[in-house]
Length: 244
Ligand SMILES: Nc1ncnc2c1ncn2[C@@H]1O[C@H](COP(=O)(O)OP(=O)(O)OP(=O)(O)O)[C@@H](O)[C@H]1O
Image (tube, rainbow, N blue to C red):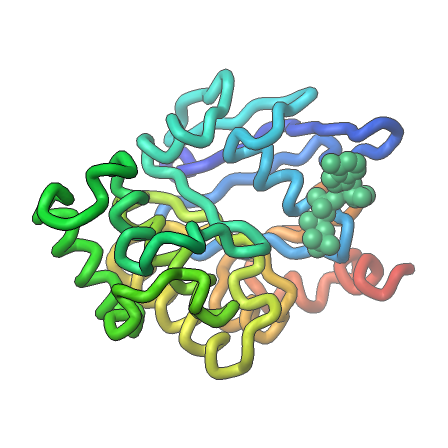
């Protein structure tokens, strides 16, 4: 088997007396949609923050494409093809929907307006908006979007960098069932074109449909991993979710 696209080895992070991530090891193989699940407070978001450089680990290693990342930094990882979304979608509310995409391609603020935006980026942005059903909203300020549409926009914006690996933090939390299906369709479409995903998600139906393998955390540790069917019936997993 080739080296995982992303690997964490013995990763640890404490907040005072709480071991939020506690010797966590797993890999994300290229070409997968890997699920990361676990009860509330099991360490999933902290793990995302460590891997993407928003928090510094106390222990362990992070490897991207087999190479150790000594000091993860969000901007540098972005340029190396690793992007993420947040539980609460982060978009620029005062910029238009299209400008949100242009800024994701590295434009400086003054260059956003009009013809100075590079034509190629503008075309790429417009194509993504069409793909995500947001084209009619291109000129609207992002603050006018619904919560679900903001999540879509955040996802579309990160695709401007053509990432190899996308970390999605609860992509369907708080959105309506139609938007859940829309989000699922877009993840599948991008996966089909070669993007690898690591997805934190509480909607177990979606995880079981979409993700393989599934990694399960509890108390900051990986307690199970494997195909969705086996994880679903694993006694340790049932125990963790039922609070046993
Ligand atoms: N900045 C922080 N300061 C102190 N404790 C924190 C901080 N961030 C997380 N924690 C604690 O670390 C543990 C793991 O939290 P984390 O948010 O990573 O879990 P999670 O699995 O993402 O939970 P959820 O599914 O509810 O989002 C929890 O006990 C949490 O209270």
